[in-house]
Image 1: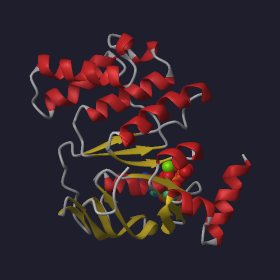
Image 2 (image 1 turned 90 degrees about the vertical axis):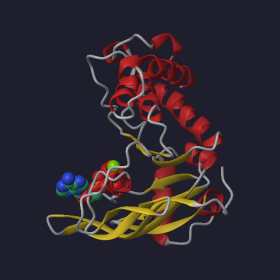
Image 3 (image 1 turned 45 degrees about the horizontal axis):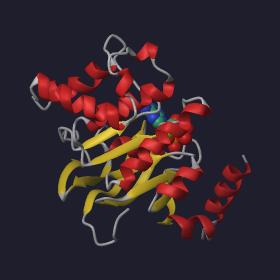
Image 4 (image 1 turned 60 degrees about the vertical axis):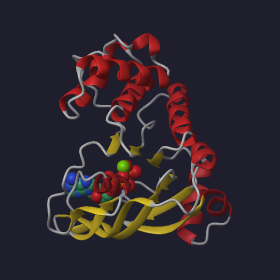
Length: 250
Ligand SMILES: Nc1ncnc2c1ncn2[C@@H]1O[C@H](COP(=O)(O)OP(=O)(O)OP(=O)(O)O)[C@@H](O)[C@H]1O
Ligand SMILES: [Mg+2]
């Protein structure tokens, strides 16, 4: 949770991302404030994943620019410059290294990228695995873990880089329903402790409980955004109303 006065951490200004000349993110402007918890909603194909990958610096943009703490790291016609761990990302598919234990998955990047000594990286990784509720699973391989446990290892792995902001792209949509709750709980706890998070999800309960702000995307554009309760209870645009009615009917 955050106050509206916190500084903007991550900001996209008029970004467009096209594939083969077709824009799938169109002139989008979005600022994420420090400590804020933002949920991005919208129908399939709206451009949510693409926008999140742009914000993470994983995709070039064809117009506009993206900055982190006021420093531009992506701009039209340039390859984004890597931020070395400031922005963490968690995907729908956990993408753990199958031949490494949970602990090894979490220590790898801090050791390789941040140059943290092995013993320290391991101590930090154990703390993070405790934090995501996996104290007993540190030496397990991904195939020995449930989907929900694997996703929590993936979250610990992203946190191990000590990012200032975490981006989640539908982190629970590949999970069986019984494992969804534990992953949502980890994200809720991160938001509650003041971590800046941006989450693409269809989990409306999570959005209502944990998001300070919701952003609706459709056809590559932000069609509406605002404080969570107000926006859910009184959506201004017909397309937002339609989307909410559809998702709540399920
Ligand atoms: N690498 C790519 N090459 C070509 N087209 C792409 C690529 N990635 C995404 N697209 C297209 O861009 C559009 C937006 O895709 P995106 O994955 O961002 O949507 P989304 O809102 O995340 O959808 P979903 O809810 O299904 O995950 C889609 O029409 C998709 O086919
Ligand atoms: Mg997507």
